[in-house]
Image (cartoon, rainbow, N blue to C red; front, side, top):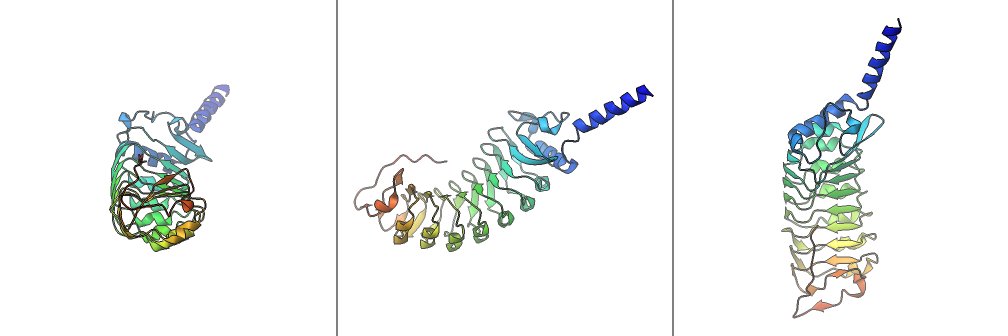
Length: 274
């Protein structure tokens, strides 16, 4: 009898050690591992170990809530199974070699607050499905190969504080509905192929601290309404087709300097792309 009890206890302990994540979440993680050459990651996973021991994974209540695998040599495409991680709050896959388009299943990540996919090789349009991630506070897609226009539906992500889409191949104009992103603190669209006039509606973003629009094809003038952006401390609009050249400002308050247009000279400034 004691032997049977000991076996039962050992079984329960063993089962508990591997029951620290839902089977759906574990299957999704394994799909990510297989799709991105997990065996070649800088910090790989021991698939025989419990998931809470896997590098870059954080669990809460037996669900995956964070994946932090930046600088980890992920190489491949994101699998559709990623959408099964419905408790995920943070997905950081920056500085890797990921490619292809973003899977449509990403719309299922309703709990997501941070989506960091910068410095990869993603391509295609920025998917409309991202607009369904209503809790999103940070969206960093810079330094990829995204093309097409910025979906106006993204302007419905009213909890966004950071929208960083620089260094892609985006075209079209800045959606005038951008005023709806009332919590936005950082906006970067630099180094794209966008055009049209810079909308005055940006001036309604009262919490804006950084505005990076340089190296595009924007026309017209800076809206005078930008004088009301009292929290703005970094503004870069050089290398466009604006009627005037404007000084790039960092660390000072642009509203007091915006009238300093450069008629016959271009302000030089080292701009470190993100």
